[in-house]
Image (tube, rainbow, N blue to C red):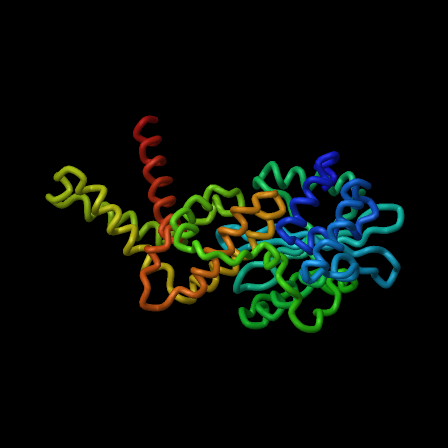
Length: 335
């Protein structure tokens, strides 16, 4: 919001239109937010309440620690391997942050915890650097949701047998107790009811252009298996016929998609998609966030007798991998 400056109020108004209650509540509760944005957010909360939209109260956006400092949380969406990060910070009345950067890996649990101290300006510069590197900055999220996800990741450590990282106890006040119940997912406020799911799925492959999803690929073994199968397929005599190569490549890509995206893999991907939607919406890409959530629901509920390759978003994983491999081979030949 600091970067929005005079556009802050307009951004808040857009959040109100799309009923992004957590984001509006966060700005309304942030005394350091630009005054126009804060006023727009407080007006927006009244509008959302009049529509019957559930609005989180102040303690769901930021909480007071035992020392009286304000605790906040930010989230970096998962990469293609399912690794994401939470930054929890305790801000003193002087504006200086004590931070814990928590790295979480899907199916593994907590991977690392790093302690930092910095001013608000330094924190903003750090987030700007992350945005330049990955295409999107960390996103402010309700701290209770962040704590719940970290507690969930700790349970994954027990299942996977991965030792908990050092520093866990020293940040107990920031990580806090696991909230009672399951806090609502921040992306839920961007989910829309749509009667045009077919059109959404038809354009779903374009979601791979979003910075949060651009690097997502199948695992290396699956990519290698696809490339070997394509090589074997196109060496046949039929590959000499016009258009035969493209047909055979597509057949292998479709088969690879169906083999890779089992029910378990689809469920895992759907959670990543939902998490990524937090960042997509925070960047102001509201339509893409809505499409991503609609596609996520379709992926999650795909029946076992359905073909995953019929979902363009899923097929695009292997199309993207094949395109990258082809470009790399061409570059090596030209070198």
